[in-house]
Each structure stands twice: as structure tokens, then as C-alpha cells.
Length: 124
Image 1: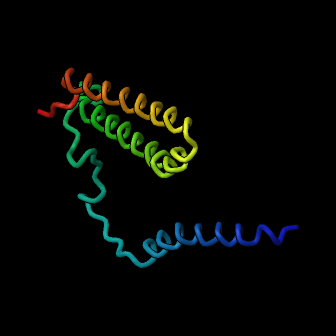
Image 2: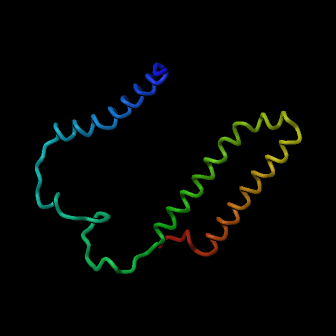
Image 3: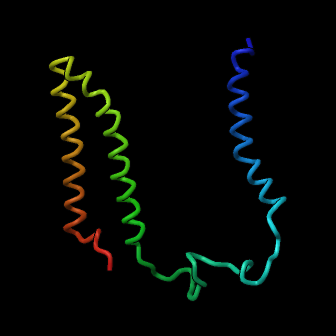
């Protein structure tokens, strides 16, 4: 009964090896020469100069969220594009599938236009 799980166990052990062996080798083989510059706290590449409760610009995060949104759009379109030939062979179903994807793309394009008009993509 457990013979079927041996390949899974081997896969898990190899995956753990790929994860932990470089970490262990880096800890053992890398030179350890701490100095004040390496041990100093940093955030985003520069020293903190004000209170942590200061106001900050959120446009960076907005651009990142928009990038993820449009990246996921492509991730949803790839499976559709790969099986669309099968839908064409089915006949009537192809137009429903094509229409649903066009509605999906139209919603994303409208959202993109709204973000563009509101200035969310402007970087100053």
C-alpha cells in the first residue's frame, strides 16, 4: 500500500534538499565579517529619517497592484487560448466561450481606462 507513495516521498526529500542545502552551505562556507554598516537597520535602501507614522505616497503600491491584476489577466487567458481550438470544433459553444472572454477583457479594458483617466498611472 505504501509503495505508491515512495516517489512522492523522494520528490519531497529532493525538494527539501534543494531548499535547505544552499542555506546550510551558505552558512558554513560564507565568510562572516560583521561590521557596523552591515548590522545597521535599513528600509528601502536608505536610513529612516522620520517618524514611522509619517504620510507616504501609495502610488508605488497602486502600480504594483495594477501590475498583478493585468498579470493575472494573462494567466487566465493562456488556458483559454490553448483549448479554444477544441471549442471551435464543438460549434455553438465556441461563440459563448469567445463572448465570455471578450466580456472579461472589456471589463479589464474599462478598468484600465478609468485608472488612466484618474491619473493612477502617472508617475511624478
